[in-house]
Amino acid sequence: MALTYSSWFDRVFNRKRPIWVVLLVCLLFLLLPFGIAFLDGLLNKAFRQGFWRVLVLPPAIIIYIYLISPLIASVGEHVIRSLQPYTSLDAESYAAVINSASYIRPLHEVLVLCVGIILGVLSAQAGGFTQQMPTLRAYWFVASSLMYGVLLWTIFVSVASTRVNAAMLRLPLKIDLFNQAPFEAVGRQSLLLALVFVGGITISILFSMRKESLLSPSVWVGYLVMILVTVLIFFLSMYPTHRVLAQVKKSELDLVQKQIYKSFRELLRRVDENQSIEDLPTQINTLTLYEQRIQAMRSWPYNTSMLRTLFFSVIVPLATFLARRIGEMVFPQ
Image 1 (cartoon, rainbow, N blue to C red):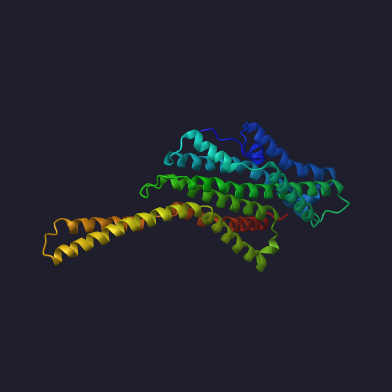
Image 2: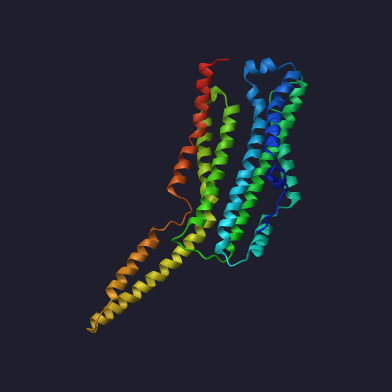
């Protein structure tokens, strides 16, 4: 099954490259702000006053997206391959459906990237870098623009990629409620998306949040919103799969409940007419046990381990901030 690069984002971030190229690009991005600060003669001041963290934030976010995007793409491809055996399509027809659903117009990507860059320029104006540090100021405008552009681009592509799962779920699927292993791949994909969001928040806290923020109510409100958004990402991204499984579960329940009703009616008729009930009680008991098993089946494609991972992941940003504060107290600048 041949899957193609369906967007410019895939070509930039998801194409496989030698590990030395990846490491070199990441190292250059991280060292760039320090080199810029050195050219302005502000390297010592950046370390002394601690604003080097703010300078590192844009490349850190871009590197994070650069490193995590292939993993997200790999998990998405695993979901696609997991569901293919449960469709009636051959490999080529299935690949055609997937490639059509995942295609994104380049013009849309360019527009989203430009909007992000504009937002980055507007945000950079409040960065506090004056005309007395021209090189650092220029770096901050460019870096912020790239960071916001890549962030908005990533969000746009992630939202657009949900069309792939929707296209797969619209296909005729041979679903066995007692074998939900193929759909757990969707749960793992949803968990990864939630964890990626948590990772981005953690990086932002690590490099940008100030110590005074710990006592600010707005910070705690923001943290609560982050928890809610993480949980929403987890559940909303798997909701289409849940809807399909719930429909299959309801259909199966309706079928067995109708059969139980018919068996009960037949039992009552035979009792009323003093006829032999033969194996009807055993049949009803078997159908009732089957009904209970169906009712106990999950219609959400996750397991307890995934929920436990999600629960602990939302604590990571706060733990990161507290660890940073402890480090600042132990090793004051």
